[in-house]
Length: 436
Image 1: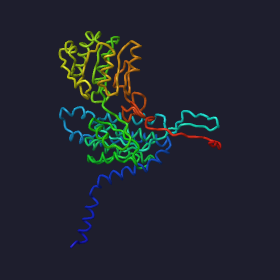
Image 2 (image 1 turned 45 degrees about the horizontal axis):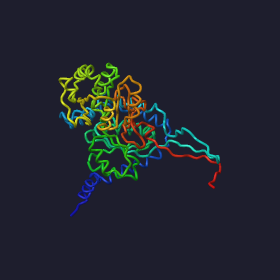
Image 3 (image 1 turned 120 degrees about the horizontal axis):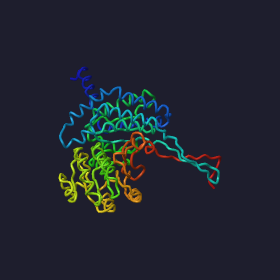
């Protein structure tokens, strides 16, 4: 016989059970979608005040955030094959400061919402123009790097978009704390609840369900490895702007300045090798290889870079390991560099076309004609002349923080800043015009 006490106990147990995945996701995305109209109509002043509050709150609660990050790092482990991902996962006081600085940079940028570059008048007297508007609800699925939570939230807020954030299980404690800090600070400044929505369940089943919510989410932006991209391609019914692998090349031309080439290559490979814009393959013109490569190899060795070279490279660099075919086109995300000597720029560009991921490509040369040809013919989201691939970054390009570096061809390509997070609508000003 059921007693009153047992009935109450059973009810409490039922209430404590987590919602089924489908109900949990629907509840989150419904709340996010309800916030869109109010967020889209917020003034620039309110959004800016919220961004400053978010930056201050991150730094004020850095101890709480570092403690959460330490839990993630401890659970993640220290296996050698996890080294690159662990570096992306790790937070420090400096990196928290950089996250806050990125948010403050976004606050300083012009608000893209409502921008109307031009209007034109038709023969019947009506005026036609385009105005920039928020996309709506943006789903961001990412791995490892907790700073993506802060960058994405800031950029979406400033551009008037609601964000639904789903980070990787390896950073769940860090991301939960960051999202909580940013949500609380923004809501206190007048941002609607749900504008920064965080998926705090790590169940694998969440992502496929989330990718079917095309009634509530307008676009998906994934940031992660090959397996994540494959999962999204298979399951998403929502348009996707891909942020794929970064197999980035630097080509040192015959007309390169050797000192400049050396500095660029060491920076592009060793400054932070675990990032998608780090150089993975170095291509060197055969006429400069004999004088340039031995000295460059010494500098790379000092930075603990392992070189895997073609046969000609191995002849010039004694410590180089023979490169396999798989080393070209591989995203090492580590202090490993594939090197190949090429006979001319055409061979270099053919190599890039075959093995590159259309992310970031660079040439080092003092020859203007070759530089302009490289810019024109190489297919990538960003092509650089005499500059490190590590500079392909929203902050470095003056966009503030970035939501990622798009390798898609449609809508946005390269670093995605505020303008890339908006679309346009036509507006018409008439005085009674009719169609005849």
